Length: 154
Image (tube, rainbow, N blue to C red; front, side, top):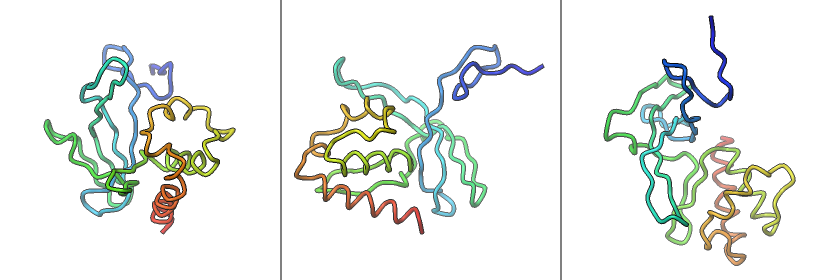
């Protein structure tokens, strides 16, 4: 007898209760250095009531190219390198996956107008730092993000 999860993104625990959906980030494989997937978990929350930041750590990293598959040992949850990451003006600029990267490029390229297909990203726009949202930085940031796209297409 199989138990179907009420939400495709959710997992069931052994007792049948639902766990939080996992968030997946594109990361660099520790073995072959190609793109892998990190299944992220909550590591804690810091900040204030109005500006809470949820810290995420990699619970498991899997690589479809070389077969790397490892569950992070305690204390190693933050030992991963984001695949879509670069620097801009001394600050870290990153995207969690290709869809997030494409969304950021579309939004910044459209002078801050939300693309029709991007309703899910609306909430995240408010959380973007001011230096990303600043009109004067948009063209340069889009250029950096497009280079990350090209890296992915190689």
